[in-house]
Image (cartoon, rainbow over all chains, first blue to last red; front, side):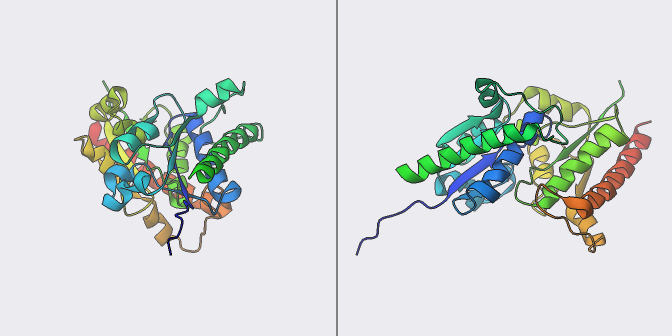
Length: 138
Length: 134
């Protein structure tokens, strides 16, 4: 009997973003999706493993439909994933998303404040919505 | 012109060791060595960003990796630049097994104690490189 293939996991790849506040926000939003919003539907990988890792790791975006999440317009995660792993289904750019929604970026890359939590929630909800869309469409 | 020290942590999105490395780098840059030390996004090297590549080419580089995959060191070396020092967060953890970080991004009190220990270790490495420089 043929079984219908069901896509169960979506890959989320945040940029590193250690040198910008939006990078820290990206990281927190992605972890919120992975740990709280869609813990059973999502997986992640450290972006630099596409160079430092093995063939299995480089196949990540071929194995999972993937969402890249970048802090800034340089789109390091999207560009690297496309070049070394596979084309992402969605590419989120946090700085652009915040601008669209009229929200401010955090003022520190080291510590996020209570005020920044609203921005984390916004980005995380956006990513979670895209996860649902991928799982619905297959 | 005096060279800077560029300290680059790994991405470490899947483990608390990654976040500890990142926080230790911020502590060194902002609290312990303001002005002498800087960082750049590791992933900018992956897209051949000219500014990031010039920064590591012209200065001394220390990488801080959360695990044995050594992503930060390998990605710097992939550009053709040799690192001056390569630290692993796991080594600090092994020397302080009584300290357990709480979560991946929420490190908790123990996690931040490890961050401070790592930052001190980094600071010593930086002092060594700066002595060599002068």
